[in-house]
Amino acid sequence: MGISVRMVVLALAAGLVGKSAFAQTDGHMCWISDVQRDRVGVRIEFGEGGPMFVNRGGENWFPDREKNGRSLIAKIGETLYASNSHHDSCRIEVVEKDGKIGVEAKASLSLPGLPSRQEFEFIPANN
Image (tube, rainbow, N blue to C red; front, side, top):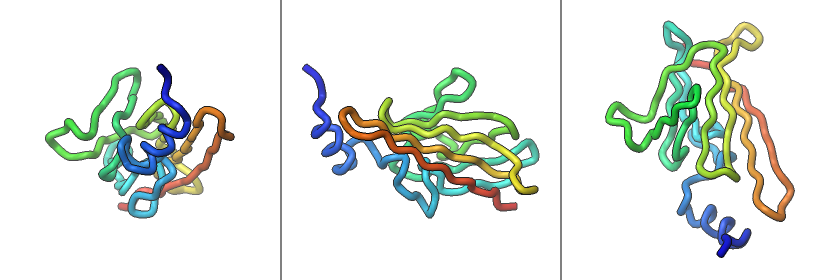
């Protein structure tokens, strides 16, 4: 028995699988609430409601299971993949853009039977 598109849309709307990658968390997509400069790169803080996990170099990190909060440190050039489901995900890359260090976030939403949607956002790190 498969899950219908209607069930997935209703689950997203009801918040049963967390917020979509497109939902703004403190003004940013991909569940990112803050980006701070760190000596090795940036500290990325994820807001409540997502993501369920972040894949980093083949290892999964689960923000809701962390004792030390919902943030992680990433190096310049590192790429992370955050997701709530295989239909709702983000590619997050730590970059330097126009002389500023930050993260480039690419949100993707692909629900069966509906057109795929992608958006990009550069989030500069606060010092």
